[in-house]
Length: 274
Image 1: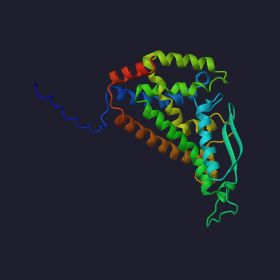
Image 2: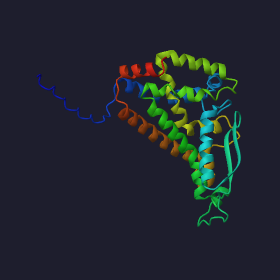
Image 3: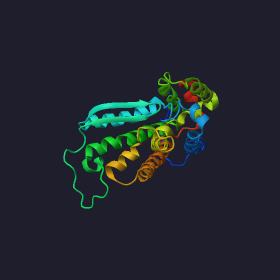
Image 4: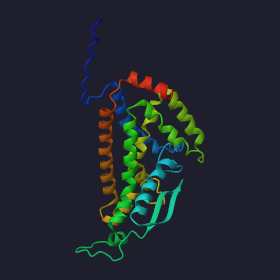
């Protein structure tokens, strides 16, 4: 009788590493470059209209980016006991969500009041939470996209989620042509950075108000009217928060997805070929 075949001992689990491979390094570099590229394109008149379907805000805002931001305001406001008066996602005016019954009924008393606004006199924790939910929720959604960009199979789902909302826009032809080109170029890698548009929503929101003077004010201006400081300071505060979320997403993606590029391309080819 043949001797029994020895059973190999199970391999010890590999400790998660923060050392990126070549694919992850390229992902980080392109993700960082995408931020200033998007900002520059935002301010070029012709390019601004061509990428209208990709960006958040402006003359033809992407419904998913702006709509998701307003949805976070809406959800938290309703949870906090507010009543919805209006929701606006307009190509020219920008996004706006109005809820009532969130402010205090009695004004606050300040030892050194300085210039007073209605917001400073009557703000409440519920109102602050509702206002914060927009930027916070957009950054969390962007975090998920950025982490997903480190694995090709999940990253390829991003344009599918977004494309459903472009039918109503005049820029659909240019947007779809760009999508097709990016999809078949280098296995659709460029498509995986839509998360930047969500994550850095503060930038687009603030630029639209300051540069393009959209009627609906940015959340930074709303924070200034409610809690003091200037809108410039609030823009810096929220941009700092979003930058920390971006760094965390990069580190999380590097740790969570340790596959080689060859393995990911192989998995993605069977999942959603390009």
